[in-house]
Structure formats: structure tokens, C-alpha cells
Length: 204
Image 1 (cartoon, rainbow, N blue to C red):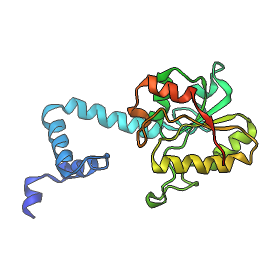
Image 2 (cartoon, rainbow, N blue to C red):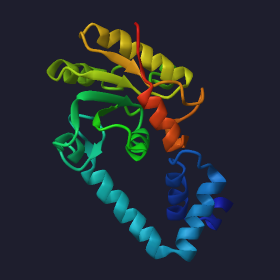
Image 3 (cartoon, helix red, strand yellow):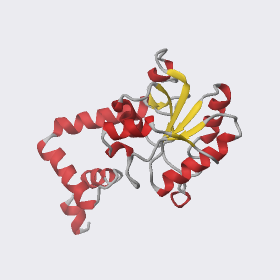
Image 4 (cartoon, rainbow, N blue to C red):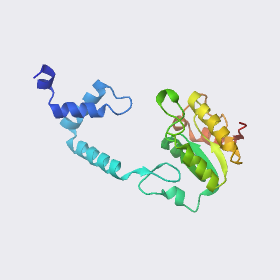
């Protein structure tokens, strides 16, 4: 038995290693979290484990918008109050939430769950772009590209514009009221609303 094994019980070590799967959590942060949960909040640790088990077991992707959902089609896609003539493409669920909080858009969404980034292994297949094309073919609409104004976000928007122009749909990009390099979830609602209202058509 090594000194580290004697000091740190194996199940505690497994917990620390498991916590490191979270973004931005290194060895020290994971260690502090594990100690806190076991020493000061065991009830919270149990709630966390139960919530994780339930979420992993029940949450999937909506077959229409690709957002997280407990059902085959999410409530937003089923809502008769949404405008089916508009389809906004965002990178992540957090971006969709920001769009909703800005209260400037009542159309439908498609969540990429990422952006084109070959170095990170994210290509068209990983972003389910075939499902996006199929949806546009079945329900022609104006496509609003609301990917982030980063190098990868711009590359994703350009790729989508080129891909979907052949489907004879209007493709627009939200205006650069957002700071270059900025993330949607970090932007205030007023700035985001202005960017959506001043969107422009993309020429491929």
C-alpha cells in the first residue's frame, strides 16, 4: 500500500477523479469539492448524485431542435405560440436561454451543441448538420445564424450559410452589436436584442 492510498481512501480518490470531468476543475478544486461534500454537506452530495443519475437516465435531445429534453419533442417545439417561419441556430443551450431572456425572438431553434472546430474533433457530423438540413427541407423558413463572434463561431456561420443557400432559404446572421470574441451567454439582454433586430442576410 502506498502512502497516498493510506491517506486517501480509494472511494474518496474515485470521487475526486470523477469531479475532474467538470470543465475548469483541476486536481486541487476536485479535492476541495470532495472534502466539502463529505465533511459539510452529505445531504447535498446525495441530492447531487440522485439528480445526476436522474438527469443522465431521462434527459435526451429533442428530435426537432436538438436541445436537451425529457421527451422526444420538447415543449418549445410543440408550442403553437412559436413562429415556424423563423429558425435560429445557436451553439449551446445557454445561448438559447439568453435569446429567450432578451425577449426579442419568438421563432424556433436548432441547437448545435458545439461549433465547427476540427482541432477539437467537432465536424459537421458531430453537430448533426444533416438533421438541420432535413428540418429546413421539411419546413422552409428564414434561418438566423446566432453563433458566437469567435473564429470558430464565424467559421460555423459561414459553413452553414454555404450549406443552406442551396436549399433556397433566406439566411441571415445576427448583427455585430455583440463584441468580437464575445459569448452570447455573457452579453446583456439589450445588446443581444439589438443584434437580433439588426441581423443581415449572409452572402455565401
